[in-house]
Image 1 (tube, rainbow, N blue to C red):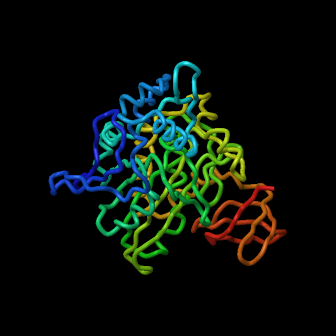
Image 2 (image 1 turned 135 degrees about the horizontal axis):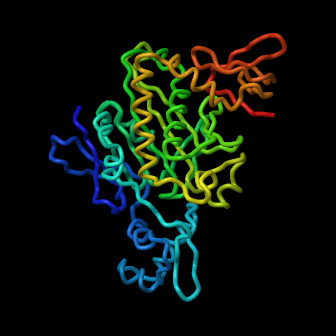
Image 3 (image 1 turned 120 degrees about the vertical axis):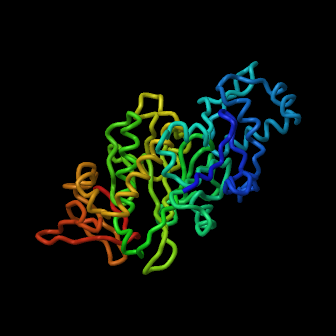
Length: 358
């Protein structure tokens, strides 16, 4: 399978464009980006994390100081931490590492031949929406990353919030010859792949909370969203969305309704390289999807048991049939949650179930 990708000069920021297949000469077309790429040149000047004076920014960007201030305030409003240093200008609290397709491919090494498209964008409405729109044209195991999303989403319609160029949010297209029944347990297998990728980058202690959360001591580190398309009886496809927190500002944490964490917390202030982590996630995900395509969830059952954050704990289950409590008892062969209620064992497999350790 040819590798259709969007590679850029190392260190250059994404500009909201996507690649076309190699046979059309590598021409670019404008992506379905939500919002302009106007802040990118400003962020490039601030990326090193050193103070830069407002007049100097205005001169280099060819805009007024008021326009610089407006862009700074817009980025702050999106959650990016930018300080005003008296007498010295503006400074990013944490230097930026742009996602770069060429660097990701270099980190992948020989594993790069197992992927289809690889794209990095400045801003999209949602990486999963972008893949869903193009599912009929993209090759199998295509990956789309975005530095920023205007309509990122999680399970049950929740909004996925992330400052621009700070965390990882991406989606993958996987084609299946079978129907929807063939993908039972897929989100659990993807979770295992994500934890293994984190372990490859030196991150330890991450567990999996059924059905789609990566957690550390019950604080959410990341999430997975699987959306299916195609024919119910087959063939079908899965759009696999993954978001992982590398750095979450305090203001965003305070606005969320649950405990969250990030890789900076887990790695003593220094999270892994975004491009290296992106490559590790791609490699582990491709490996897992190949196994899942052949053997289904059964091949991952043991690994899930080792990382199950709910097993043996008292749970509160809120599903369309009502609310009940019980003790987590792992998952069944399909990846459905098992809950022990008295002497009975109940299974929960609806995507609309909320599970809360109590």
